[in-house]
Length: 319
Image 1 (cartoon, rainbow, N blue to C red):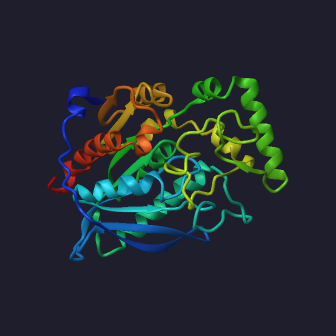
Image 2 (cartoon, rainbow, N blue to C red):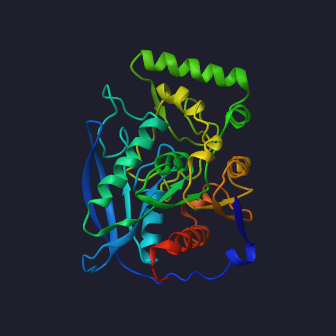
Image 3 (cartoon, rainbow, N blue to C red):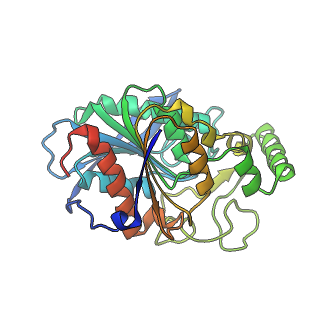
């Protein structure tokens, strides 16, 4: 594996993206019996010709209007079309089987990403031979799995990727006994048809998935009206047994990762790259938190610059 590390000095270079107006078009597509809602992002006044395209997916519990839309706009400013969508069971999209919602299902979300690539390739504004995938946080693992063996995907970019394995899961969730307790909770919730709790809450809040305020809790950040702010405990087993950091051998496309030691589980990136045999570009920014990658303008710009340059390497896009 070749790893090309970008220095902090390089990361601080001014963005080469021109400020552009973005045109959005809503669409729907089908996957496994459900209707999913999505958005196509284009340069304003686009003439309808086929553009190199980036499919963008976001963090766990998120909807397309959060960090996916922000990165989609950034990629359009850099000469691409972009596609975002709501996963099944979230936002404007239809349910998972059994009328289930708010389950963080790696298998279902991976399937939805594959379906999104297939649908996007059918759009006249999308060049199906120049498609790329950008996964943010939890969906980084889903994007890797959706791209693996997928001839529609030329290159993959990951921003602030949450890549976990059994060791990391145990460290994050309180040890093997605590993890098993969450799995048992999930099994019980699933047997009862689901158990939905708030996803985000204030610091120290009880009975919520993320009781630490910040992005998902703040109205001027991720707590937008479109955000479901729900979590179904029935999803714990699927999430905790999903070891995306161990899936590197599945990916053959060139890869770019932007992360920080100050963001979530950077050891997952190291583990993933140790198992990755392909061409990789790694940019580690200094003192950038996980939530900073979601909406802090400077950090989003630097991350977008890196992944856009990576995608442009085979797209023929001028930046």
